[in-house]
Amino acid sequence: MASFLSNSAVAITLALPITLVSIDQTRASGLMTACSTDIASLCNGVREGRGRISACLFAHDNKISTSCRPELTKVTTSRMFEKMIPPDVLKMRNTPGEAKLRQVCAADINSRCKGVPPGKGRLLACLYAWSNKVSQPCHAEAKSVLEHLK
Image (cartoon, rainbow, N blue to C red; front, side, top):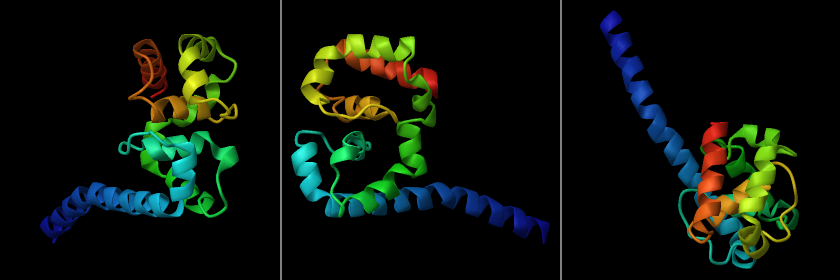
């Protein structure tokens, strides 16, 4: 009996990450469908994959349509999104780290993240969304900020 229980526990533990990935893929698919108009207008040019589209939509939270909002909420409250934009980002507000990020990334913020409302890690989410197009110094600084928060 003990052997059966331990084998079952191992099977459940191994299956859990697959289940989480499947759930997150379902959420992402729902997001892409429900938010297609928002993606086209707010995130045109953001490369798909690694949560960049959801990060872009999250960054532009103040402009999200009512049809997109429920799906965006499902994605941004998931564990996968939390790994991408850690909750400790909220502690960055009005800190030297935020000031340095704004200084190093000023040109990228002006060209890619104009109109992003302050707070809740939205600026960092926007920079992450455009990570394939921001300058190398900005990319390095944003990455450094995220690594210090994890």
